[in-house]
Image 1 (cartoon, rainbow over the protein chains, first blue to last red):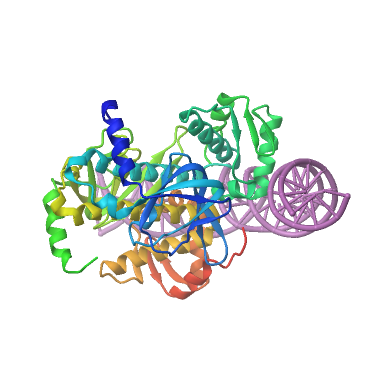
Image 2 (image 1 turned 120 degrees about the vertical axis):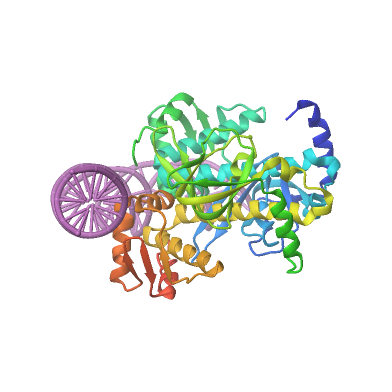
Length: 220
Length: 220
DNA sequence: CGGCATCTTGAGTTGGGTCAATGGTCGTGG
DNA sequence: CCACGACCATTGACCCAACTCAAGATGCCG
């Protein structure tokens, strides 16, 4: 992607944005099954998306931080396939889908940008399938922490100090593990000297150690 | 989607198709990391896509049958994020990405069709995340068989008799379980009178029973 | 300060993994 | 056409990672 085009791209993107909504922590942006007419970008705050199974089981399918777009699952059927909830006070930008469809041939780079964003979501989901299907608990949590760290770094924050916005139970739901297991693994990581854990504050002490931990358990 | 528009849509789609490749069973269509210049549609046969982890672990991320499109993961970076392999002799249609980008404003419904297809893949992936993150072995296999049955039905085949194109190990990789576990669950399903299993031939005897099995294990 | 939600830790259980042996199926070549 | 060999599937015995249940600890907010 040529750097020159970026300002134009952002300008063009900006014109698609409809409104900025404010959500209190715990508030629902949209419900599974509801009519889907827009995509969303987190401006500030933190959002989760979750799938609700009939019998009450919940699977969190994503956590989105400032600058990240979500809601692509609703395009296929015009109905949301998951529920979106703010996990801290957040501001959300809305991009009406009709605006995206109106993108003309003069903004082909913008059209392509949306394809890329959806492709990125697909790659991310496949990575999660790999994590859930073939990694052990410790590997999953290490990968999760490294991923958050990476995303903070890209936003210009320190990659070594993170404040978790979600609770242990939500991390567990995302990683296919129970709260107690998450808690135990955090304690173990601390014992191993990989990180300091104090409630939601994580200080990463040994990035390389975390990376090496993933992939140690050969086989599964 | 208006039924009237369908013939036009198919005609328009057809014009994007570049070539039809023939692949022998076991042949690789593209490798992870390779340059991505196209999307693919299965014309005949059966294809799997898989993520390869450094340490040799493999996660199958999808099985695609006639009429299904795949390869969306390569759009973001122009490099394939997974490897695609034919699991039986197959014919594959290639849709060069440049053709998709050239779609003009006169074919807005076609442009939207691609958004829908990518959205469908995202929904499917989220369903898999739910399956891998919060279902037990029996539920996973039941869901898998019901999904195949459903896709056969949509293509006009009997939903009660399926011939598995993949081996047990591949089912296991897809569902995050080991070969032996898949084998044991198939045997159990047969004992329970839910289906007859003879090698790759599955005869479903009790669809309702399979559906009810999913969601019985409350909690986890 | 009290009440409630969240997090941690322990003890015991279990679903699915591992290892190992056997049984089927199919393709190839004599 | 049959026999061999390679690959795949099944089954059993045992084990361990993660779950369940239960009890405290910690922190937060009114």
